[in-house]
Image (cartoon, rainbow, N blue to C red; front, side, top):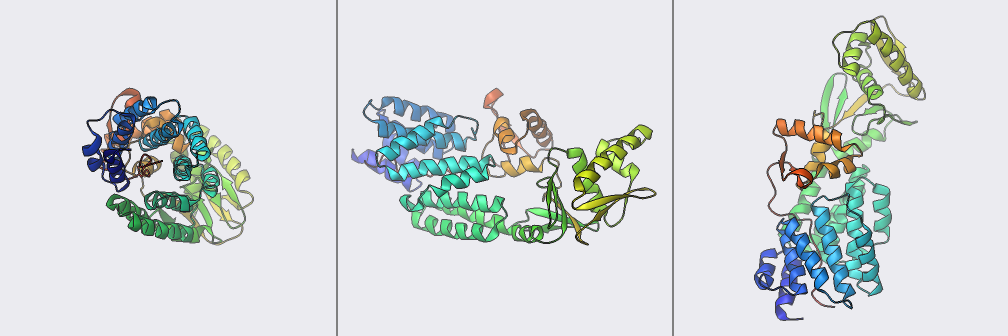
Amino acid sequence: MDSLITAAALALAKGDPLGALKRVALRDDALALALRGIALAQLGDFARAKALLRRAARGFGPRESLARARCAVAEAEVALLARDLASPTTALDAARATLEAHGDRTNAAYARYLQARRLLLIGRLDDAERVLVELDPATLPPASRAACELVVAGIAMRRLHTAPARAALARARQAARQAGIPALAAEVQDASRALDLPVARLIAHGNARPLQLDEVETLLASAAFVVDACRYVVRDAQAVIPLERRPLLFTLARSLAEAWPDDVPRTTLIAQAFRTKHADESYRARLRVEIGRLRTLLRPVAGIHATRRGFALVPHHTSEVVVLAPPANDAHAAVLALLADGESWSSSALALALGTSQRSVQRALDALAAAHKVDSFGRGRARRWITPPVPGFPTGLLLPAPFAGD
């Protein structure tokens, strides 16, 4: 391997894509094409990066399966950064198997990290944890080890396990210092700040206050009756009742919880649940039916009593009723939360991550765009959505130098 290729690979490992491009920008051999692709991906030009990596893979001979596998890993990460979450993972699986067969433990471990990161993005936390169990962080260089610890921290934060998240972020911070890449250190710092920012609002007795992650963890471990508007469940110390597939019933439960210990007038419940201002007899009959359904579902944890003017919630096992709501009082807070990572998302990727229909996501994006909360670029299937301002450097692409030597 010549000195320019080695120098370009080392520049990429240090987070210097411009330095790498200076050395290989005019070369068309397979190794140079692969390094140019990785450099362009680090600079945010995902389309050209993917094309160069595919050209590089085709440029390697039939006996160079290891190099082609490394190109496949790099292309998989470009797809991840471009939030192409629906693309098949068979190529990455095959590349990982090839890398393991050839003894390239570093890049094989990195392929596992990419799998775990994708699973985290689409909310499959159990599968992401299973992948990480088979990954030995000691086989990764410091930059990749820091990225892997960020996935561990992300899983812990999604599960509301604050202590493991802080421990993983501390390990990521140490690995980032060893790597000496400023962009990586900044990414770890941003992730650490998330633990100190409000992640939800606590609504009780007509008042609302922000909660940090550790406070949410404490609340959910308490004996309080919680209507969780972040996960669309109702819970207490005895049971958890999911209502994510019953949005109308959840709306009624939240209204009753926000008013507790008072009752809620029938006209108010009708307006909130059915989105109408005209509470005629047909809507009153429908309200009785839906309250009956909600009463049946909540029977293990609470009762719903009829009053002269409406209905009141009566918990069985506690004297504290609260609502846990998203930090932003926005109907599309979940979409904004995903876009807040600074990357560009397609509507199909957002729908996959949120577990909803693409049409619902498109309606939410249109509403957010009208309110100047999101921007888009591209057309048709190439259209991507971001939250302004657009970040200039995607710090997620932290490939170990895959072509530095065999």
